[in-house]
Length: 146
Image 1: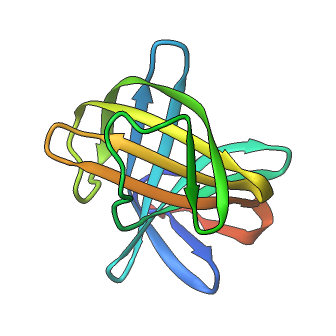
Image 2: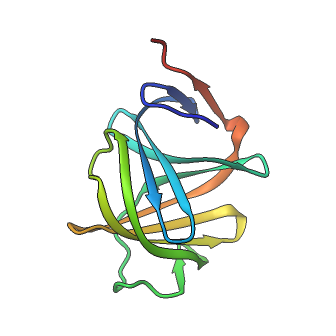
């Protein structure tokens, strides 16, 4: 799935505008999150399609834990297991509210049912995201017109 700044992504009957792209370069892999905004709500899509699914995350309130986070996190009745972690160099294309290019430490967790948590330790604060892997058909992409 290719997304670029200016594209419109319809999700849950709401049109979101793609504002920017975060590229995380970790030692053993890279991640890409696309920031899309509707009103004052920001969501992130990981546009890699795995088994017809894409990951959609939203910022959540901080979890009560120390840094670094533990290998298992119990949140909203689910046990999340750490699937990746590492220091990342982050490049930003376009604009992403609340984030700047630089480095952060990333931890990603997964629970049953395709539920995910992502914790990012930036120099200025720790950010928490949560969401789910959804069928790619739940997103309708309308590319920006030149």
